[in-house]
Image (cartoon, rainbow, N blue to C red):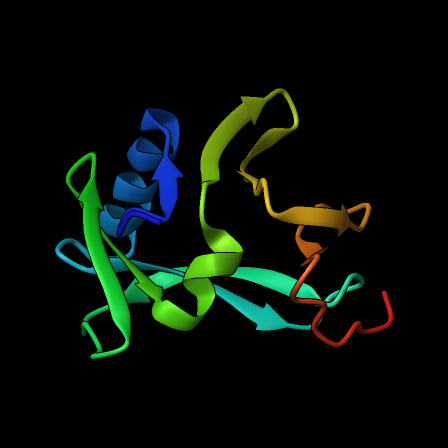
Length: 121
């Protein structure tokens, strides 16, 4: 597994940079994470952070510094984050090759080795 466990598309990177600018977070790091919950047991998380922790993998793509906790790396390995724009608005899409099941909303999933604790939808 490489240190770059997630792949940002150019469209996703442009949207993240715009969000950083809008929220006055230029220079922040993007944290991609997995947490328990959601209909299928695990949910994705993305947010801005200002500190690299000892347990983080740290890499850059499209001039964005990305953090992933080492404990989340196996679950996220190979995950592609994209941004799609449509007539109804836009949103991030996450394609995780490790997910074997997901709920209808697409933000909750489980893998063969990590199931989490499902919540009621």
